[in-house]
Image 1: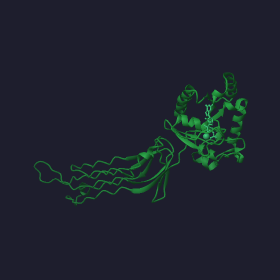
Image 2: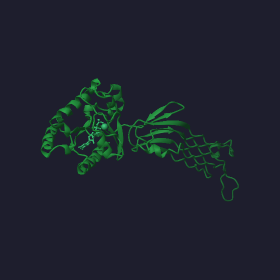
Image 3: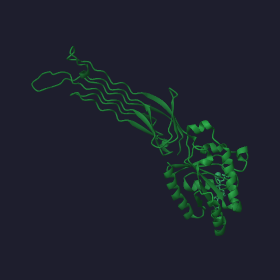
Image 4: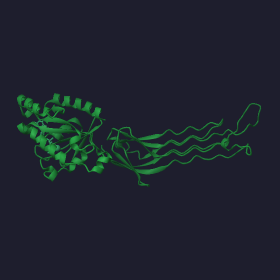
Length: 335
Ligand SMILES: Nc1nc2c(ncn2[C@@H]2O[C@H](COP(=O)(O)OP(=O)(O)OP(=O)(O)O)[C@@H](O)[C@H]2O)c(=O)[nH]1
Ligand SMILES: [Mg+2]
């Protein structure tokens, strides 16, 4: 099950209390205060992990309570600090503090953001010892930790975006590599929205088909390209059904990408390079509809582009396996 938003209550740890305690020494009835300070309450962090399904694991756990600090001890000993609580959330999670309205966004793996501060520990009676007060009975309680209600929503962004003409086989490839169940059809514009799938923790986005003139609104237009403005890499699919036209089909789609330039302010906020500057893999699909000779000839043309080229067919398991193995390596080296 996929959950992309939820509300949670979070509380940082309370500081431990300071204590009143008296030093004991053999032969001496009383030798001064030695009550220690309380430990610090645990802080709460959110931490980005590569798991888009993790929110589903919290379905029945809506409260996150961090450890309290322990009370101080005799012999001037500090209470133990509470151990910080890390709440794992998917990369792309936006966390809003519902009381203050403050927003945080997790953008990369292992990124940690502090949500709440634990309370300070109280003071033990030793702290109050002075020349005028040699038998202090004062102590202070630990401070409560911060608490709050938070709204979490996922703004998933893909690690790789599949683009190409309608019918190129984008959704079919997504379904083959991931558990996605995108609609497949032998007609144009089967996909009307992007589809997402998780591939070894990486997110693949299947973008609805693009056609010449998309940047002027033809077909479904290019509005969906915003979903891949933050991806590091594109996979451009061109089907052998296009025969001799394959390279020109490829170039036409590149022209449309060129015309989509993320607004500059978005670029400054992590949108990354423009679409044509991103790394691109070329995937020549449906090798089963053509012959060896044509495949060789077309590959030769595409090689001039000096980009990684793959040939696949859904009916050739080995081609899918080779592609999938290399894709894992490529994705790993990109993050
Ligand atoms: N022969 C053959 N057909 C394929 C292959 N891959 C996909 N197809 C077929 O090609 C058609 C289009 O596939 P889709 O995956 O829906 O194509 P798409 O690129 O997502 O198309 P849009 O959503 O319209 O942009 C379907 O009928 C698929 O069954 C392949 O390797 N070989
Ligand atoms: Mg599709």
